[in-house]
Amino acid sequence: METKRQQRISKLVQHDLGEIFQLEVPHLTPGVMVTVTKVYVTPDLALAKVYLSLFPTKDKEALLSGINTASREIRGLLGKRIRHQLRAIPELRFYLDDSLDYIENIDKLLKDK
Image (cartoon, rainbow, N blue to C red; front, side):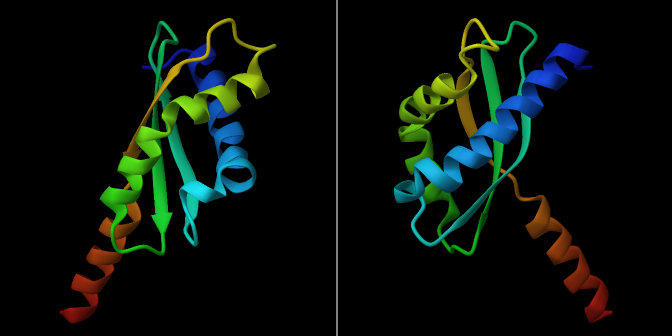
């Protein structure tokens, strides 16, 4: 169960990371639309688990690996944006959000029957 503070910080990080991926680091994801779908922040605010939806790309794992490699750069850009709202910027870990693929697969299975 997330506290109100964790929820507010999650929304703040989600919003700012979305803008960062669109405006400041498009070189990490050339030709791919990156959507920050959900952010979970630990109770001590030291770690943020960021779930990304990547479209259209075939090799999502390789792209996600490149994003995780550049997490220090992304964290630095995030720190510049939210430095007045948080004392410590959480460490970022990126994960693939495959919920859209799952929904698409269920729809396909239902149509086949």
